[in-house]
Image (cartoon, rainbow, N blue to C red; front, side, top):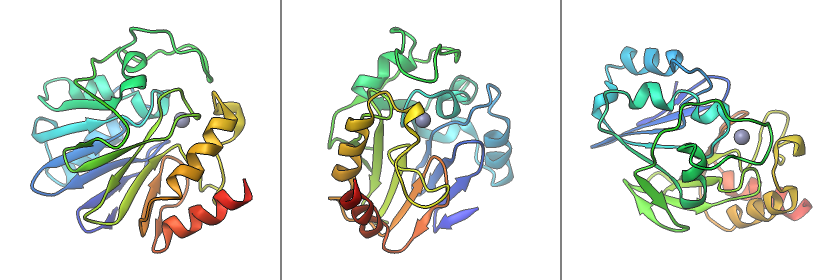
Length: 209
Ligand SMILES: [Zn+2]
């Protein structure tokens, strides 16, 4: 569905987001190794993987990185992640957090991002704790945040369940950090996107942590 003008939210087990502007940007790639649902959606709105400029991966969990190799295959799109997460996505390092052994085929990260860095129109906000190098992304032109798994909205706004967090304390610090930015709209990896007043709601949550 088109969540905001030029922002498509593709429902898979974890949310994939497509931004359509003067360039095409994908954030996260679903759990499916063949990326079937994502590729079907792209084809329905006549977007070809070869036309993507960047594929951002918020973190290395299987439901976000699973389809990366399939989408990247035959596409000149650059892959971007946080610098910390890049080695786990490429499978150059063994990931030591939940949910256990990584099975996705390693894909090289072309653009390792540092906190605050802007790439292809999105500002990286480093939000570790869910995984070692989780990140969120800010589209300042739309007042829109793609939080990844920095927060969860499946049954109210809250942290991710701690069984999936490598460092629960750091995860909560990252929610407090995210709450300091201003954005009206947010999409997260799991749960209902928020349209209007989004960062205020995250700030309310941060106060309770
Ligand atoms: Zn996750």
